[in-house]
Length: 275
Image (tube, rainbow, N blue to C red):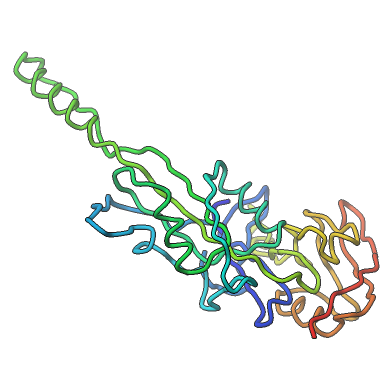
């Protein structure tokens, strides 16, 4: 997933994820909070030199937000996973009850993924996902004058360039959180249109992009892709509305109005409570 931001309430009661600046069909995701990018890695723009006794995963670490997310485990057993697809992996982690603490990304010579795990242990992450992608800044040069000397010079330069391949190293650090009151990650959608009068029109409700397994939302068969419209008497137009509603109704069985496909559907959800 290329661009993502999250909000976590102070008691880890409800997780709200907001995506920023990503096109989906004819809609654009609008950041509710302006906290910066969640499910987008920070981009590395230049090669980093690997120095003795250094850890670039630590040096290039960017915390997800200023809430200093912590695991529910005081001393987690940090595990390392070699990821395959960042977007799919992030969705899987969210659905499994994890939330992202932060990310690292840089370009350098190949270095062991265990360095990411070492830093994950330092910040007490439960899981560390690592991605390595070969890259190169080489450019094939062409000899336009056609001379043999020129051809030889260009060939030697291109051979030297081919030795400069580096690796884009990315890592995401995840914390396991307590079961939430409700259990969804959402985004706010804004319409993108060629009609200036429609451009930027805020779409109703909050779009669900992940449902946490075994959460109250999952047990009520609320699904990814549904749009939350109302919980109890609270209309949901922004993240704070959802946060406030689940706190207000925690521990209760409450009506939830949502958009499923082309229909508005009402369902009952038994919210968790945090004493």
